[in-house]
Image 1 (cartoon, rainbow, N blue to C red):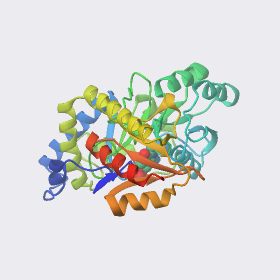
Image 2 (spheres, protein in one colour):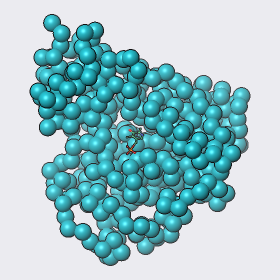
Image 3 (tube, helix red, strand yellow):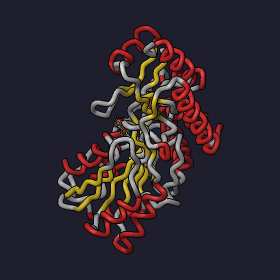
Length: 359
Ligand SMILES: *Cc1c(COP(=O)(O)O)cnc(C)c1O
């Protein structure tokens, strides 16, 4: 089977084997050693000296943690959305009683830094701005550096906290947490990290901790004050997902050996390879060419190609599983290419699509 959805992604064989190891005491020395290494290695990819915590949840739990640990009901929040996951971030903030102003861009487009700055100048100050690094629903990567600069430029001294959903980007597409001033950044184990689902990672800046001290949204399981207390002894407050952590530990070890620069370059190459293959078939690319994602490609099909039928044929006839359209009325499939993926994996998709093209 060729699992080409944008998460969960396939595991390398040694990571798969590591996931099957026997359970250990999560309050014992083996766990503490593993926890210490995972945390240190994550900081390399986050490019941060901020705290990084490991949560047992999917990525969405990490997004919820970002909100409830920094905000109070009634706080003004600017949610910059370029698709499904940007909308989800806004919905979480709304569910906990924030006063959310949405700045939405059409699906397929990136967020325009000038438009974000204008919104802040006209309607600010905001307590926080919510950003998505890589919008998985449209195959678009935002320019987080330009966006954070625009936010600070417009807000001046009243600079809001910057909370970033990096779930389908981090570990494959560079995000410089400290250099770009991102206060909270969320990642998810099942995307670029070549690990099973079930672990969210979250970085937390000193400014985020100042906000934490004032934040009044209800929280218990995702209280990062508890995570901090336990992290001091290399533990988590509650029982963690050990199997997923076994996998993440080994995949991070492999990623550190390959090196961040090499990994980012590899994703750039595989992204370009995917786009070139799709163009060669005569199919379309949904995303704005200035902001193509190197982890997921949204492919627009030809007239006469039924997306549900294409998906089914890919699955039943070729063993290829792709993502479905997230754009209403657009004949689209999405191809994931992050983590453990090769050009040969994509060649299989191109060959199958070539046979499914209308003649
Ligand atoms: C996958 C994804 C999420 C949600 O992650 P879950 O692990 O399914 O909760 C959020 N944001 C982005 C950008 C994603 O790609």
